[in-house]
Structure formats: C-alpha cells, structure tokens
Image 1 (tube, rainbow, N blue to C red):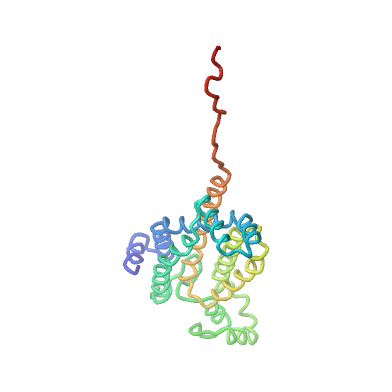
Image 2: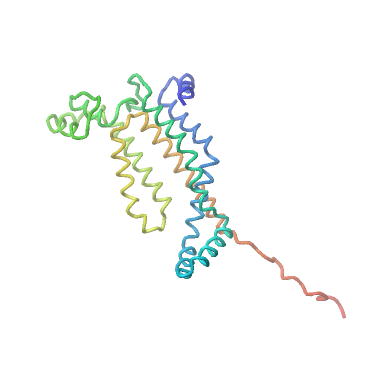
Length: 253
C-alpha cells in the first residue's frame, strides 16, 4: 500500500490525487468480491416479503421452515453466506490502507484546501489560536468560546468540514439505497451519517479523502448493482412460448 501510494505520488506530484488513485485501484481489484456481496444483499432484500410469509406460515415447524427457506433461496439463486464472506476478505485490505494513511507523513500537504495530516478538530483548534496537535473535542469548544473570532477563519477549517458533510451525505445515501422500503432501518438512516460525521472530526484529512472517495465509489457501484438486480428479478422464466400441439392435431383425417 505504501509503495503504491508513493508510486501514484511520483506520477501526479499530488498527495491528494495519489490517495484517490490508490483508493480507486483498491476498489477495482476488489470489485469482483464487492459485486458478489452487493448482488447477494440485493437479492436477499428482494425476497424478504416472501421470506416473511414463509416464517409466519411455518413458525411452529422448524424443519419445514428450513426446507421452505432453502427452497426459496435456491429458486432465486441466493446464498445467505455470500454477503458476509467477501466482506471478511476485503476488511483486512481496507484496514491496511487506513493504517498507511493514518501514519503517513504528508509534510503538511493540502488538497483543495484540506490538510492531509490535520483533522477537522485540529483545523478548528488552529482557527482558535490553539496547538492543532492532539486537539480534543472539549478543548476545541473551550478555545472557540474564548476566541469566537476564530469561527471566521473558514480558510482553515472550511474545506475539511465540507469534506465531512460530503462523507455524511454519502453515508446517508448509501443507507437509503440499502434499506429502501424497510421501516426497521429508519433509525440507522439518520443515526449512521451523524455517527460517521462525528468520528470524522478527529481523522486526518488524508484518511477523510480516502473515505470520501471510497464512499463515492461504493454508492456508484451499489446503484449499478441495484439496477442490475432489479432487471434480473423482473425476468420470469417462460415455460412454453407456444402451447404444444397434441399428437395428430392439425393433420387431416
């Protein structure tokens, strides 16, 4: 990961573009796994109404319930484990990429105004005239309360805040795609974006740029998979296009 990041930096002479290209390269390499995962999740979502009917119908007969569920999975080409296994394979790779970006020395480089080695809390601390290193949430609030004029320094914290808002929006949009027409997921639709945005406050800009790029690619991929799965679910097998003629039918006596 580190070598690839340095390679892309050598090509672009921009750490920001190098992070985006590295993220894109990783996503392309993992596309077969993530595509399989998304397709499985989408198909599982489509058969949920029929699955619920089966669960209610055979609630008192576990053996029959399992038989009918497996039959339903087989008819729709669904493997319940297919959505988990690809994620387990991808997770270590994303953790490696995350660690590389967390520990990389960007030498105070910026990309579109975002400091790649500075968090949003660090940028707000700098706006309040405080040391940006190891700035905590409470400390930053106290500093801004003592120096409210720091809020006018949008040049210091504005770009990274916009990036956080973008990540929050992409998280919300992805949740909406994943939980469409599912009222049980309504709580996560607004909780996850807020939770992710709060976590992002303390992450360096380089990690934020990776996260935003990866989220954008994920949303695009998920939308494409949903469209493809929608088309597949609408296709119904045709047993006979023409009714077979009976033996001797249509012949003269």
